[in-house]
Length: 345
Length: 288
Image (cartoon, rainbow over all chains, first blue to last red; front, side, top):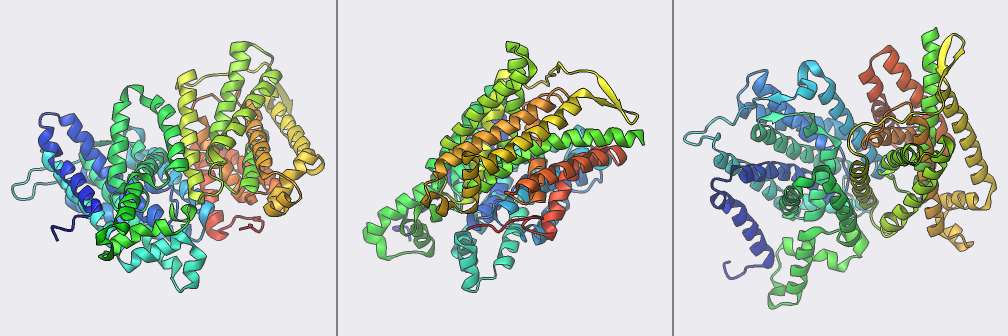
C-alpha cells in the first residue's frame, strides 16, 4: 500500500503530522499550545455540525447550545458536586446525546428554514437558561476551577502538552468516525437525504430515523467537545453556550468544507489562526470576517478541503491509477458529475 | 387594574414595533423564500442611523427617521444585490450562512462607528397622558399611531399600486409573474429596500424608549421570527396579528411572572407552535 499514496491521504497525513508535532515546535509557548488545544475541542464539536449539516444537509443552529450543555455538565459536576473528571465527561456526552435525541424528535418534524429557526430558538433557550439560572449555573459569574482529567497511570494531564494530546486523541476519534460513516451505507443514506429528502424517501430510506440519528450524533460530538473545553479552559461562562458560538462553528466548517472528513479540522484551525492574527481588532475583526463568510458561500461553497478533494479526484480519474478506486474516492468524484448547486450541500 | 392598563399600552406600543419589523421579514420570505437572519441587524443599523441624523446632524425627529429609512433602503437593496442575488439558485442553507456573515459585518461596523457602549437617544416627544388612570407616555402613543398609519399605507401600496402588486404576484407564482413581464430581480430589490425601511421606522420609533447597542437586533431578530412563524411565513395579516399577540404576551409575562420569562416567551412560543404544527399556524401552501 505504500506505493499507493493518494493526494488525499498525503494531505491527511500532513495535517495529522503537523498537529502531532506542533507541541514539540512550540515548547515554552504555552499560550499558543493552549489556543491549539481549545481549537481542537472546537473542532470535535464542528465534527458534530459536519454530521448534521455537512452530511445530512440540515442547518442546526442549536449546536452552540449543545456545546454549552457539555461545558456546563462537566463544569458544574466537577466543581459544585465534586465529581471526578472522567465520569463527568461521560455524563456530559451521554447527557447531550439524550438531549439531542429528544430535541430531535420535535425539531425534525420541521423542515428546511423552519428547522433552522426552530433550532435557533432552542439554542437561545439553552443560552437563556444557562445565563439566567443563577442558583445552578451561577449565571454571569460563570464556573471556575473546573478539574483537569485525573491522571491515568503515569500520564498527568495538568501538563499542557499531555492535555493537548488527550484532546487530539478524541479529535482523531471524531475524524475517524466521520470517515467511517462517510464510507458506510449510513453515510450514503445521509448524503441521499441531503441531496433530496423526497427522493430519498421514495427509494425507501427511512428519512426520519436517519435524520434523528444524525442529529443525536451531532449533539454527542458537541457534548464531547464541550466537556473537554471546560477542562482545558478551567473557567467557563455563559458565552460558551451562545448562539454566536454556533455561527463561529458554522464559519469553521464552511471554510474547511462541509461534508468532508478533514474539513472541520482544517477550517477550525485556519479560522482560529486568523482570529488570533486579527486579535488586536477584537470585535472589529468581523468587518473582515463577515464579508469573507459571504464571499466563501458565494464563490467557494465547497470549502478548502472540498476543493482539494475535487481537484485530487479530478486528476486521479484521468491518471493511470484511475481504475483502482476506493469507496471514499469515488464519493469524492460524485461532485464532478452532478450539478454545482446540488452537490455543494 | 391601573397596572394592567399600563401594561396593555406598553404591549400595544411594543406590538406596533414588532409588526413593522416582522412585516419586512415576512415580505422578504414571501418573495425570496429565504429567512433573512440579518433582519435584526438592519433594525439595529436603522436605530443608529436615526441617532446619527437626530443627534449628530441635528435634523428634526420625523425627518431623521425618514432619512434613515432611505439610507437603510439603499443598504437593503445592496444587501440583496451583493449577497442574496448571487445565491438565488443555491441550497437554502447557503442563504442563511451568508446572512450570518452579513450580520457579523453590520454589527462590527456599528461597533466601530458608534462603540460598544449603550447610547441613549432623547426623543423630542415627551410627557405623559393619563388614560383610564394609567400614565402613558406620548412616545408610546406616537408609536401605535405611526404603526397603524404605516401598516395602512403599506397595505394600500401592496394591494393597490402597480409596484406593490408585483410583490404579491411574485409571492404567488414566480414563474407566472416572469411570464407576464414582472422582473423577479427588481421585485426582490424593492422588497429588500422596503423591509429595511420598515425595520428602520420601527427602530427609530422605539429607540427613545430603549437603549441603543450593536447587539440590540439579536433578540429582536429571533422575536420577529417567532412572530412570522406564529402568523405563517409570508403572511401579512399573520405578521400583524402575531406581532401584537407576542408583544402582549411578552409584556404580561414579564409583569406578572418574571422578567426572564418575558424575555424567553418568544422562543417558547416558537418551540411550542412548531412542535404542534411544523409549518406554522397559518402557513400558506409553499411553492417548491
